[in-house]
Amino acid sequence: MARMADYPHALDVLYQAPLGDFIAERKRLAAELRAAGQQDAANQLAHRRRPTTSAWTVNQLYWHARDAFDALLVAATGIRKGDLGETRAYRQALAELRKRAAGVLRDAGHAPTEATLRRVMGTLAAVAAAGGFDPDPPGALASDREPPGFEAVDMPAAHGSSKRPTMARAPVPERVRLAAALAEQRTEKQAERKAREAERHRLQRMLHEARAALRAREHASALVQKQLDVSEKAAEDARRVVQDLERQLEVLDDAD
Image 1 (cartoon, helix red, strand yellow):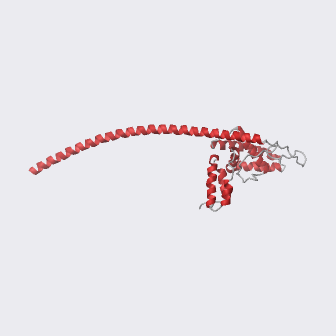
Image 2: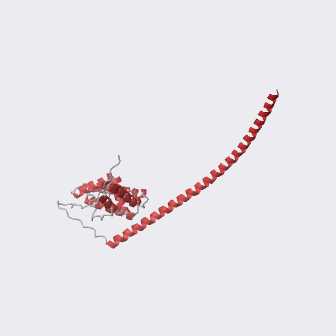
Image 3: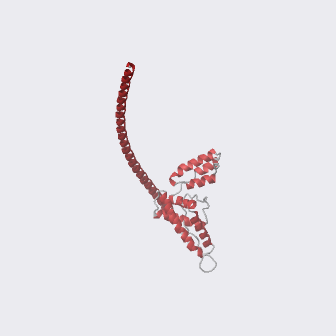
């Protein structure tokens, strides 16, 4: 029995879709919600933003590398509570997620550049520091998060019971952030063009090979057909000889 369309489920499906299919999948899911009579939910879904490549990667880590993702959140929670023994586990979880992020990007046809992985790690650090995705739904980030000032979580002071707030990183100017976003879009478009060009060359090569194979098979078929025509003519000649001999025998039999 198919699951009835609802907004949370549609949101989960949308943000697990391949990045290149996001727009088409958003349109399809919104149409399903409208067909189910959920016009408000459909409108809400239709306005969900396409994620950046790095935010999309973090979403995929949440959906498909949950063990490492949960380990990161658990370790960050321990550190926030003052358990410095969780620092090693926290760093190990980040290292594992970085490795898996590179695999996610490669498998999806995106280049795991240092800039993209750095944004992935910064967003992971921010999510860990916040203890989750709020105010976004889990696994449904549309944009990157700014990492906190130190190790993605507020580290407690080494001595004493009081905690000293760490220095936050200076906010990135909007023009710098916009320039970075435009640069990422250009990089993505270049990668997509290269992928399309590679696919075009592959299909052209396959078409050339298929045409050559077709010509060879047509030539072989023509030879077989010619041999078949010769064989049929020989069979027809032999049939006439048999019929003539049978008539001659009938004439002799009648004479007796």
